[in-house]
Image (cartoon, rainbow, N blue to C red; front, top):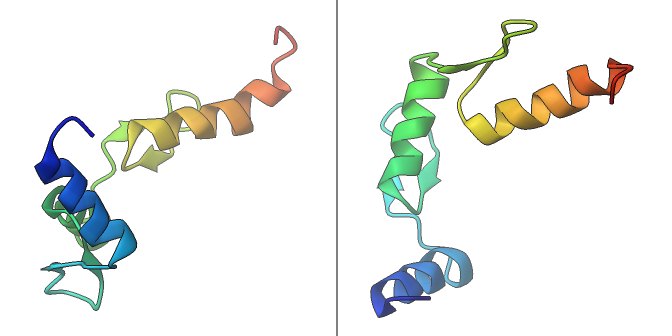
Length: 80
């Protein structure tokens, strides 16, 4: 890790299981505030900003959208 603070956060969340950011709407807890915010937006507010341009399915993360396109649409593409 490039900084001791990042190493300490990694140790606390991964190895010690600390999840200080609690969702007020359900029982979920998260180790990072941005992960809690993404959870609230996607699960409780229904926001899925990354849309598939082929089938219009929505995703909360771009990497998940890319995986969807790879597995659901490119396997049927004869040009691949």
